[in-house]
Length: 357
Image 1: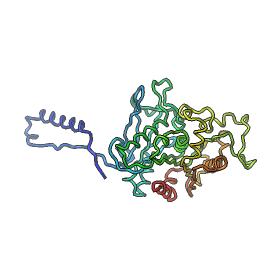
Image 2 (image 1 turned 60 degrees about the vertical axis):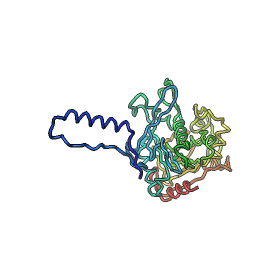
Image 3 (image 1 turned 180 degrees about the horizontal axis):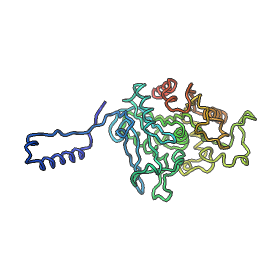
Image 4 (image 1 turned 90 degrees about the vertical axis):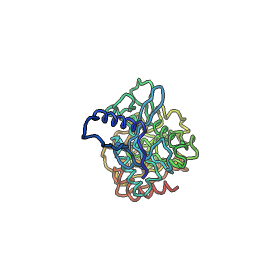
């Protein structure tokens, strides 16, 4: 592991404090002749701890600059030799450090900690804001790519634009000259975030020299690109009677009334992205309970539970876009637990195959 010293100004402040202390004790025989060593704090690269030692702050620039926290194994502003990047998005509990721990463990198991930078973004809500530069989103809004809060802010940022910012940093060849692949991954609400981002971002066109991939694990919602939903009665996809479930095709479940970020692209471009981009659905075969499951009419049109909804969405893509680039990996014995997906043998085999492609 490589160690990096703290910035020199920290050292200067510390030395100044030592000199001040020596002047105060100049007349004390007890302290005469003693030389205190300069203590310079270091941090390890890769940073593999799921605590604040691996947390870094990035700046989102605009009319007003905001700050955003991420957990990362490698600095984002130094020359690093990593070949791949994984941006792992947390779920509804916004426990970014725990998600960071999961993916770091996967890299340790695969002996890839030196080759892969793992980044876990932390999408705060108002209860987690500690200063006036912290950016935050509504409880649900961050997972849809909605703009930050408050709504009267002079400069709002989509949560998806945070991923754009991270990708811009990773694509900087001055800092990451060997980087070839970027994966945006998630579980549960983080998987919904990642699937929506896969459909709506423009980074793949911007950085054609980088391979992108999206890992969608145990999401209960998916972006449908037309009004058809599965009908058990008909055994096929049909257009439901909207009078029985008003708004079922609205964003983020459908294409109606998309938010500002998603509206930057035409419906045709979003459909092209969904059918062409390298997306993998990771489906826990035991994720079949109603634990924290939305059961409104529009949700139940997608399937009975998360595993069923993933299967039906995969069938939807194959029916309407038979040449799509989405694949599916079923994970045996995995319920709604990110570790049972990503740290299972099937999950690790999948990750390794992605890193080696």
